[in-house]
Image (cartoon, rainbow, N blue to C red; front, top):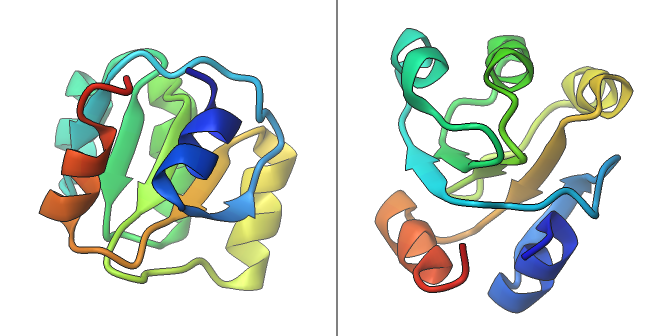
Length: 108
């Protein structure tokens, strides 16, 4: 499933989608950035509530397919611009982390 298809099927909001056709092949949930960097898999959808610039850096280093900000968290404009420039797909869910993760079950 692509990031765009995942966004549509789960009803996530697009914050930035520079690579909508990127394949998603799993999911990782976590907020401790150093932990995520060592454990999130290539092409995973990473679910977090963190919204600072370091999320974009970790997403880039981990080469995840997208970041899904749960619980209604969003990025400020400058961070969203940086994500766009670095090719990091960022989506938003209004649901809690657990419910957001459940939405991915069977899709990735």
